[in-house]
Length: 128
Image (cartoon, rainbow, N blue to C red):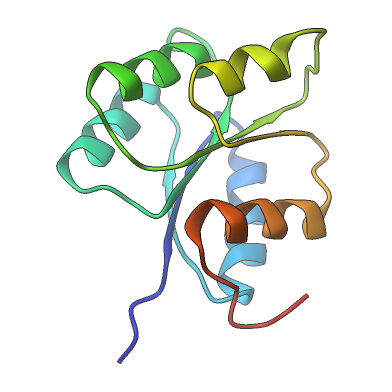
């Protein structure tokens, strides 16, 4: 039996977790949700996942902190940044910090699935 690609979602919005889980599971991915950056870093350090969808603007431990932690720990999981607060130069900053893609919320389904496919080197089971 083929293993489903595992997508980690780190966001402080429970509604986004639900929506992304529904979308990603429907396209053949397994999903692990995190609400706190430290929890996600610990999980990724223990067992790399196929991709991390990362919100930048969270209380206490931001997405920028998570990107720094990923680099410091030499975690190889590809990161796609999702943000509702697109600001000038932010895309260049997160790419320089190691993210493979930068998408703004509300995220376009096709753009997200394409970014995940590129990041993981896989295609979803159910083509969009």
